[in-house]
Amino acid sequence: MADHAGLLSLDELAARFGAAARALWPQAEPVVQFEPARRAEFGDVSTNVAFGLAKAARKKPQEIGAEIIARALADGGVRATVAAATPVAGFINVTLVPAFWQRVVGDALREGPQYGRGRPTGERISLEFGSANPTGPLVVVQGRTLSIGDTLAKAMRHAGYDVFTEWIINDAGTQLEALGRSLYARYHQLVDPAFAFPEDGYPGDYLIPVAEKLRARDGDKWLRVAQAEAVPYLAAFARDEIVAEQQAVARRFRVEYDLWQSEKALHDAGAIEQGIERLRKLGVLYEKDGATWVRTTDAGDDEDRVVIRSDGRPTYFANDIAYHFEKLQRADHVIDFLGPDHHGYIKRLDALANAYARPGAFEVILVQQMTLKRGDETLSMSKRAGMLVTLQEVIDEVGVDAARFFFVMLSTDQPLTFDLELAKKQSNENPVFYVQYGHARIASVLRKARESHPAALAAAERGSGLGALTDPMELALARRLAEFGPTVEGVARARAPHRLTKYAREVAGDFHQFYDACRVLTEDEATTTARLGLCIATKTVLAATLAMCGVSAPDAM
RNA sequence: GCGGUCGUAGCUCAAUUGGAUAGAGCAACAGGCUACGAACUUGUAGGUUGGGGGUUCGAGUCCCUCCGACCGCGCCA
Image (cartoon, rainbow, N blue to C red; front, side, top):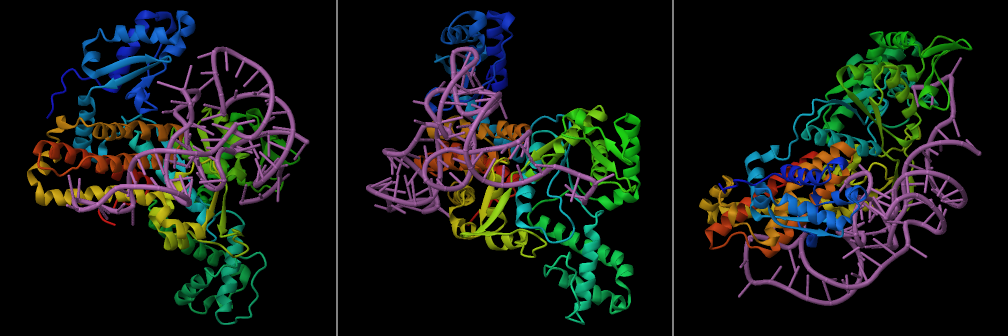
């Protein structure tokens, strides 16, 4: 093990610089944060703290930077950690000693998949995403939300949050009745092809195998039962079949949930009435025109919303009230993924959070619309129209790896046009292969090392000999590995999973450059050991990043 | 009409939430393998960040206004 006596962590270093700044200008209460330098010529890390002090100090940021540096360098720990610190254009640019980056590699080797994990925040987060009506198969559009939600959940867990993922099965509405009538028709059509299909039914082929399964179980029984009587049973049967299929596809897409919540189950348990009663006691309900309203305008909504219709039936919003209160029981903070067509919901949820005296407890992440193309042709995605492109088809056509990487790659507020033609044809152009290739390349080197340099490989796995890492390419790669933790933390805090795919590409890019410039397996045992250590650490970080994205990390391809 | 989201290189997208000369990939052009995987790499070219105004040391980011795209505006779900 290298000797790291006196070497500070980046946080400690920032604290020392902050102390120096506070000693000079205590009334301004400056706080120093280091971020990776934008350009190599700016050193390793930099801080813009001097800009904030310019007014109070009545000096140019440049001079302030110089004074802070001089003061900070009086500290022995700072001197041991910093190779160079210079004020440039108001920024303080810092280059760290090689030992700092060697330690990063050692940390990654020692911690493995746990590398970069944040301390537990103690905050419980509920994350709901992907939820769909149980009236048909998952469609490609849901692939985007599934990918983004699952990746955010994994990143937040790694960053230290206590995350609970859920899916709401929308099985309490009138569409279940239409589903039941649709299955009734499909079932009859098995013996009478002329049997009329309901106009408002779900016309896709996917109900035919469901009908066959029902017939295999119950025989001709439902042929002799009137539709009105049969529909509730058939609807439940179809619901179960379709949800099971949705769960299977989600799992194939590598997305697991902690809870699949049936809305009907909430209904049956009386959650709606309890939810309304609760709001009534909180004083945010009132009666008008025979209906019951929630005062959502208090939270800035355009108008108040009805929860109980004048005929006594609850609205959809009433379901939401019940479910969101339920979620609030198991989480401190509740996040919903919604399409842009539901942005009007934000104010309503704000109103609920305010009523519960938990302002800000509900957060909505809007994922912008996705449109489908096949070449020049824009595809309709209406289930009613019956021409849907399922998520399963996309999995079959482009594969889970390419699809998930592609879906996570875009920021949530960027509308996405998914061209099936392009996705297939371009699969070799999808950056996911670039990243996976990096991982496979490392695996290949390690396989070779096992034969040619077994002693060096064993030493590298123990984290020995990293002191030999001094080449700029080696240090650049190590610096990138050090960004893993902060990147994941940023993904969690900013709800920006797309930064993970960007990071994965940067790690792979830095590795490819290192690999091009530095031969790993050499005659020099010390060099070989150090570089093998760097390779193993890189492989670990790449694998962890890809895992968060739901993408496999192959050892060969 | 009111409200929301968005507009960045030929194309697809970033920009660490107000910081340095706005960065990547693809496409284009010119180079690099008798050593660990060339699905790689080096370089060149490509921009009035939709237009205009404002706020300040500093704006792609914040405010106003116009243009354009998408989406909402039910006692539907």
